[in-house]
Length: 394
Image (cartoon, rainbow, N blue to C red; front, side, top):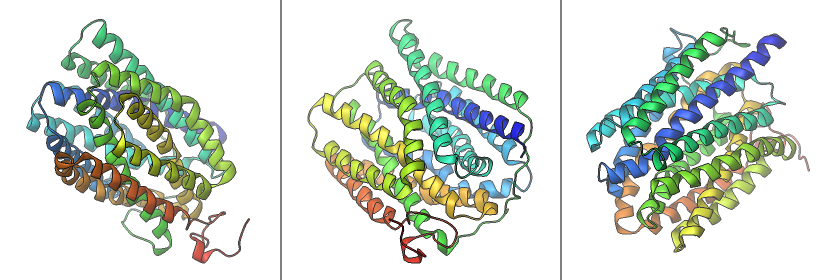
């Protein structure tokens, strides 16, 4: 890829992340209050919905077969469009099964996009630039989400728009942005042709383990941390949105900084710091009785997850260039093995003792900490985990 197209490709990654940040954040920010107020969900119902949402993620490996017929870049654009349509429809079906249907539609677009976007990022970005630029991409996505939360707060509190109108706005505006994305950028050629079949490689096993545990932790954060704030502490929609505003405002500045830190200190040290922090956060969720402390834990939780960039860049350093697309598909399926199981099973646990859910999250963080310390200080092909490290690097 020449220099001009390389710059355009980076701009395309930023634009796609911005669309995703704008549309998905609108869906997610209103979801807990919407299902609680309009569909009268319990914790068990929420677990059922989130398990259904993760089924397309579990089936993300099918993306590699679709790539036999269409380009990765085209599939990413189509997936974004499907996401927008699902979000647009959400407000019109305030029942358990209606929400399951619209969430499934939205989720197919979301997970296919995330799968392909991960592959394109690792193909289009030089290894030396990837951590810092991926942090920058997260920053732009966070800024788009910040705009979303501002729109929700103004439209909901001042103009008194209901959920139907708000979901429609985000879906329609998102579709218009996708059309503009398709028109604005050329079709980029992949630097290295990608394998179009599924496989697992033994030397990537640490990456697979970290990916699985990340999926388990993410579900506890996304499903139950927000539900804790609404159910136990009575946070209203405008309060939840303000909390999301703080999160995304922090990420605008923190994510690019985190990317540069990872590039400087390496994935092993960065992930170690993240997982130690998450152990404390999850234990805090289990014990907290103060609404403000709970909100502070939620903000810390969100910031720590930005360090998951390190898992992607670790894989980029150890992988063969032609493995990116297929492994992105497989890794999303691995990520979502736990994601399909945890929301529904932990939803029932939540009904009896919510603290157990968060202690389990701390347990997943402990396992992640152990796995992260198998990463060498200088990962590379042939030096994928600590037992195969050719030489110690201080």
